[in-house]
Every structure is written in structure tokens, then in C-alpha cells.
Image (cartoon, rainbow, N blue to C red; front, side, top):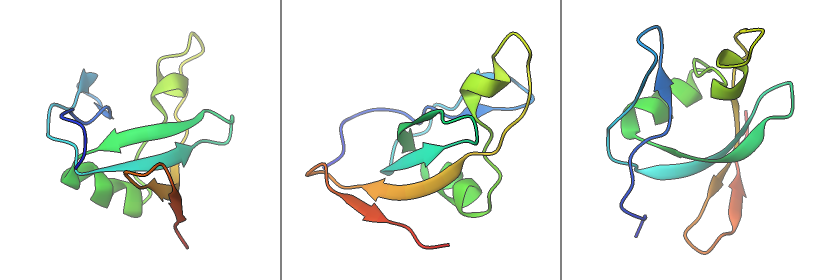
Length: 86
């Protein structure tokens, strides 16, 4: 069972955090090595699969730029990671 939490993806251009219920946790990273376990909703799982998610750290940086996040693995409840293949 996933922890009771909401998706952490920032919907752009509204700059508002998503409030949908988390359905899975993905290990995601951008080219600037911003990496971490990212709780995502069903809508943003599809966006991740389509390569449409932007790194929130890069987007909110002082030099504001847009870098795509890449889903590297699914993080299981046990903490184990299931590597995703392109």
C-alpha cells in the first residue's frame, strides 16, 4: 500500500502542485543530476512515459530553465527498484 500522499509534480504553466492521489513512486532524474523518488498520480505516470515531465528543481532555479525528467525505475513498497526499459 502506498503512503497516503499526493503527486509532487508541478503542473506548468500554472505553477501549481498537482493534488491527485499517488499511484506509484518513480525514481526520476534530469541531465543536471537532480534525482529522487517521485510520487506520481496516474495522469503524471502517463506524462512520464511520454517524456513530458519537467524537472521542478531546474524550473524553479534562479536561472529558470526547462529540463525533461526521465523515469529510471519504479520504486516498490519494499524499497526495491524495478528498472524501466526505454
